[in-house]
Image (cartoon, rainbow, N blue to C red; front, side, top):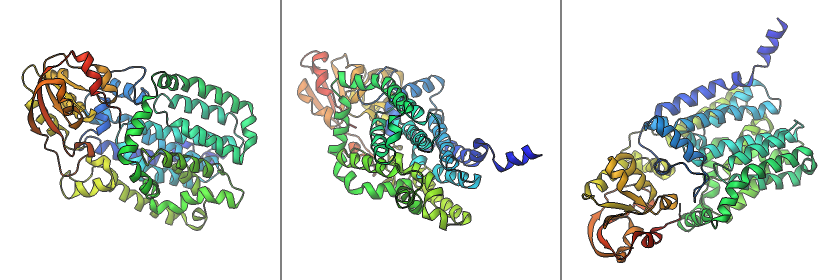
Length: 479
């Protein structure tokens, strides 16, 4: 009887987290097939498995390739995103559990994380950022546990961060930010055996991908630089409002309080504020995407249900209503619940651009393949359009499509003398052929990715020299 009562009072972590985990899994599975593949998902589906790519480490591509051997169905391709979202909800409950909170508060943290904006977007899609978010959650949790005296926290943090380097090298920024955070708040932890072992494991696991970038001249910096050129000013201007939207504006007092409260009183998680500031400053200096600091704010949200002032002032009932309201709006904004037609598509895409990047691909691919003549190759300047032709075209279409965009350039050039050039960057190479004539312009929707606003098509023949000499002219490193 005593053991049963103890088990009821202290249920297992999985039992506590089960409701939000199950709910987010069901929601994401229900909407996974709607609309179509995302811009990046089309790209990953075209890449063969390799140890290294110019614009990213290989893990997400490996998983995409493996699932493609099972099925091309979109819901199958997105299963890793669902699994990562479910795992993220579980990890979120472990933050308040580590701080000694009740099962109700632990579960509340799981609900808040699972049904706020950024985790829903990443759970619906499967991109490098999907697994990266989960890795950041786990790394920060391990560091939090280390600050509270749990053994081997920093060793596990280094191990997870090192493995995460095989998915996205952004975790190196997190490691540097955590180092600064601990230097300012718990310097003694950095001279422990666990800190040394964690650092060695991190370097050993992450070094191969970093070295491959260095050996090849850091092409990833060119990709990031292209994004900065396209949207850097906008990212800087909208960064703070975007972060509030990603984590949940109604929950601002919770995650904001988790950053500030430990500096007013002696509470756990003091390292979170300097860690966040470092990542924020790095994003302002390298404004390729606005979501980078979210990986620190979501752990702050989970911690805030214990340490923030709002957590003490709000009743459990009020907190639950706030989380539910935030979750309802987040689902409408992040997930393909509404019809992919106007005015919904335009309105949602202005708040969540990933919505616009999931529609129109079969039509774009059909336009390109219908224009392709017999024996004619296609060179597309945008990896998503190339991926659309690869996904929706025939076997002949898939063999004929080529692109110089990022890692697709390594797959090689066409071989024939007849080629259909698609996109502004591609048609700029018209002087590489004896003759060219216009083939029209791709008809796109009212709300599209900036690179699809104007897509000219040019039919060319007679390369002025061999393709191996011409192909470097078509290379394009950008996001």
